[in-house]
Length: 539
Figure 1 (cartoon, rainbow, N blue to C red):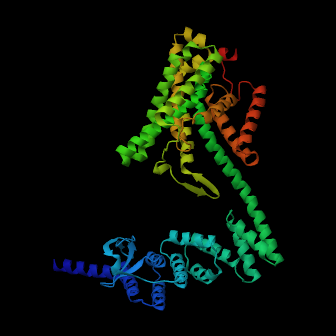
Figure 2: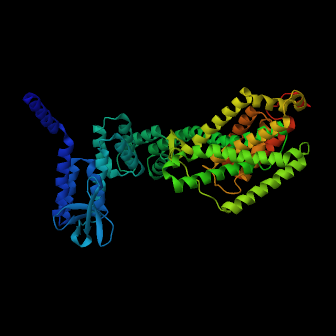
């Protein structure tokens, strides 16, 4: 038993001796405590230099607070704190952990005085500490910051950290930051030519201003020629990245058009109804999302990240029910009369818009992004926003589910039979009026869940649906009435074409040009890209 206790004690001593954190923290706190004795600027500078010598990034918050005038000394005991607030009583924060350490009267505190030269010294020390941070992500961020704000005075410091760096990616970033600083320095021509080569290898839009500046300011023909060649190489590479970005934006727009048009493709294909109120079904889905989020904000804010999952089935039911009522109450009396159907559904759209204005007001309503749909990330030079990426995925899932319903369910079989040959389907015992009703409800419900997605990227207002109804009809006509694959291809084609035309013609002219192309296209193929097959359809 005594042997076990002895071994345990020995192990504890060994662990205590090999743990540097507490010793480092104690040493760091001892140096920070010296600020209480710094009455002169030279003494403050000496303490800053001691912190620099320790090389511990935990000192960065203290140094930043000192630079901002927030590092103060409590007169009663000489303790050093970061203060928060500016009233008679201020909050005290621990200078290392920034945890709350009580309060104190402002009169009992003395500010550690600084001047501009000390602030510059602090900036240099903080840069040096972050460049040598233990965490490679911190070092990489510091390198990128120095690249964006090149300073020739930091070249010697960068030389030191480059020699010490073991992470290949971080080392490359340091070398690129050094190259940016070299191009603003008075170093020899050979060094600047090497720096230009590094800039060319890095590429990207942020390099172009640096190379343009050195090419315009230098007297050296070699540097000027090298910078021109590097700019030409980067611009050629950027053309491919820009094309990729346009395709990405086009796929994103195409996914939005697919969600807005896919329900219309079903109703138009099965029933031949030009539903001008389809956009309002999208609007109802968006407002359902708003109502769900408002309820969650007031009643269960912890569940906000689940708001879209809750809103999706509700939006489908609300818009689907509205579509079912509209078909049973109005449209079923107008089959075979396209002009009257168009006018009736247009009137319904006006009624729904005014009803929403009366209930929710005419102004835009805020619909927030859940945390998992917020932010963006980069892949090379491509900027990908998370909410757009999720909408692309969501539209693909909706398309796959709808395709499964049409191909693998009894209702889908009946719907396809009615689409291809209504009289024959009726003679086989299919209740075509109810197929029409539920098809219209399905198309409206899909428009509702499209509204849930659109609420994440567009303003939720009574006019939300009007911005997509024309585009939806263009997608349906171009792809082929009632054909889901045609709707998919049509939406993606129009989305990508629109994004490639916008930089040259502008948003409005691009849409007009696309419309003209579709008019010319349907002159040659009136049934669209993928025409439906069947006796009734072909007749």
